[in-house]
Image (tube, rainbow over all chains, first blue to last red; front, top):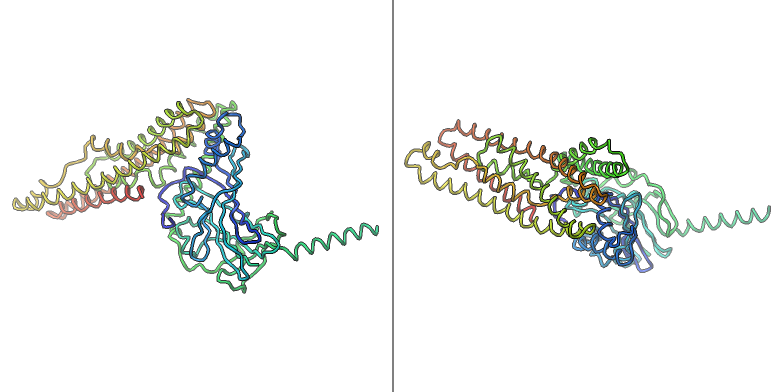
Amino acid sequence: MMATMSWAHPHVFADVTVQAVFDETGFIGVQNHWEYDEIYGTSMFAAADANGDGLLSKKELESLKEATLDPLAKQNYYNYVLSGTKFLPALNVENFQATKKNGKLVLDYLIRFFVPVSNEYKFLVIVVADPSNYIQITSDMGNSDAKAPDALEVEYYDDSLDGLTMMKSFRSEVEGLYVRFKK
Amino acid sequence: MRSSVATLFVALLLLCAQFSFSAVTKKKFSMDGSTASAETVESIASSERVKSKAPSDSVVQDNQSVVSIHDSHIFCLTENFADQQKKLRENIAAKITAMKNGESGIIWTFLLICFLYGMLHALGPGHGKSIVVGYFLARKGKWKHGIALGAGITFTHTLSAVILLFVLYGILKAAVFPSFELGRQGIEKVSYGLVCFTGLLLIGIAVHDLVKLLRSRHIGENKAGEVAVSKNTSWKELIGVAAVTGIVPCPAVALIVLFCLLNSMVALALASAGAVCVGMTVTNMLFGIAAVALKKGIDKGAAKTGWLAAYIHIVASFAGGLVVFLAGLFMLC
């Protein structure tokens, strides 16, 4: 999957921030905040808004989730969480929310992962990117962060992916959120 | 007074306690587990989001020995094109909204932006440029052929998008785009398969020419070359290549057209598709002209080599076929 080069060209544009989410048991997922470009977002919103009232009912929200996220399931929802030398598989999607902000479609949801906490530091690198470049994702890791209970010690920073051979398929300006955590 | 001081004291204690037990910290650390380079960038209380951007330039600057393939100038240029496309598309959306609100005077600016967007969009991979170059390496063509193939591919690419979108819009109305994407992905696979097949055909022609050349050597090397080398491309062949390559509907065109339709602006939808198409055509035509020029250069150089010319032509034809085949294969995979 990661060996894919950027053969495609962007048709969809999205500005993304994330939050690494922890509970007492460890790392439990990545909270995604996606703001799509107006042209694509309007098309997807209109497709989901079956009765055309400009609001999304529970059923319409589910339909939007199917249209926007289900096709990304095979690509791990473009959430790449590197733990050691392995990418963690996404377990499921939770708390899917959709709103419109200045005409733009904004999606918020949690992609579930799991890494148990221990007394030693565990390290993660979180990247949100589309290696095929069909969606040009601008992930703002400088404004991304982490959320954890007091029982855990979590540290993070944002930086480029230079030097990470597992991340060579990504565009050079893609940044990662580097996280470590322990009890 | 006393109560105010006590309240302040309690508040300070609470604030200190909050920071002492802060669970989440924005700080630099080493990924190998050592803490030597640890430097706090920003500390926050648990469950609170960071409000301000940290000076990311101050964090880890080492560990940069592995140079990514994406550091090349060409890739940076592609990224820049992609960023420009993002800005242009935001501009297109803003102009459509403005025209919906009565600012019809900006139509020419809008069409110019669509044209520029088309030009930049076609520079990205997947618009048939490598196929145009590969094809004219394999087949002799005139300037008009180069222009026609470049234009033909983008015209088909746009027209297929507009037709598919209008047909689906007629059936599904606003719910059209996910179905458009499904349709596009299906057509895409068939098209890429046919591009691979075209590449194999061109390789086949090159091999056929080689066999003919080797069998005709008894009549003299120069004459054998004339007998063996395939003739110029034909219009029929060009139409076939343009159809096979361009048949994949362009999602970029479809999205702009749909955005206009959702704003009840049918004429603008067609005008925008036309402007994007012309922009993409300019880019592809330039590649077509460059490809014909390359082939003419090779042929001119080869002619000076005498009997070797036919072999050079066959090698170029084989390479061209291979380029087309690999272009299809990469997109298929």
